[in-house]
Amino acid sequence: MTLIRPTEVPEASGPERRRPGTGRAVGVLVLVALGALIPLLGPSTALHGTGEAAAPGAGGIALLRTVLFAALCVPVGELFIDHLAGRVPGAPSDRPRRWAPYAAAAGFVAALGLASVVATGNLVPHGLAEIDVGGLYRSRDGRLALLEVNAFAVAGLCALSRRPVTRVWPLAAVVVSEALRAHPPTEHSPLTGSALTLVHLTCAALWTGGLLRVLRTLGQWPTCAAGTALLGLYARVATVLLAAITASGIWSSLRRMPADTILDQLTTTAYGRTLLAKVLLVAAVALLALSARTRLRRAADPLTACSPARVEVVALGVVVAVSGVLTALPLPIRWR
Image 1 (cartoon, rainbow, N blue to C red):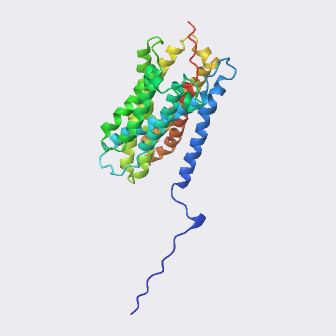
Image 2: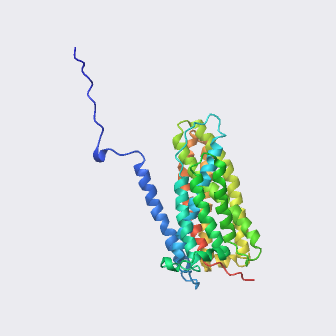
């Protein structure tokens, strides 16, 4: 007796077959490309009409700073949310693929580019012969730049480890280096400024990277209860992070632009204009976060909170780019 095997239907091929997530990946690439225009064009736009002089290669430096900040947010967020996910009762063991190794590689390249600028006396090098690597060891900025390069290299190696503690220390070194770099000893009370930057940068990395990791994790978890619990945990911590970011940001701004001059400098200086744009963006992000939190508590399906959260993470990416621009602009004048 001959057995008749059922006819196998061939899989669709050609343009009709599309891998899941391909459209989303293309969308992310488009957003990244558009986001790169902010640091590249931001300094010249902010400086227009102020009479201030731009530093050489300000657009490139702003782009490198943006990449460095983003490369810091991704692994910090992964550590933060994976820790919170471990506290969710009955949480699935599935986790999205870690982007930390790729972020460390991007951060290493960005830190290396910034170190080459420091090695040429804060000028954009036009050749390897102009880069004085040995000179990095003789200046404070040079040593901090080298520390960031090495920290990202170590972070890339530690990202392959399964022990979260090992991944914390190189990331902490990057945050401390940035805090010290932003406030040289010639500044008034530099330790206070560095402490404020340390708090501001740490909380911003947890908030931005954490939200990205939450959204990716929810895509891996089919159960609504576990996803809702994780999003709720993150939302509670994010409220504290937003308060710390706001407080440290206002204090830092008042240290650089005294209260009696801040309104004028917000519109007449490049630093002030960029800071104003950042404040407005953070306010918009806060409204999106409030909308997501309201849906999480009152909607029939709490995971509808993911819709404003996705817009929020894009807006936070713009905030990171604007922050990169802010670091490449001349500091405001203290009029007192």
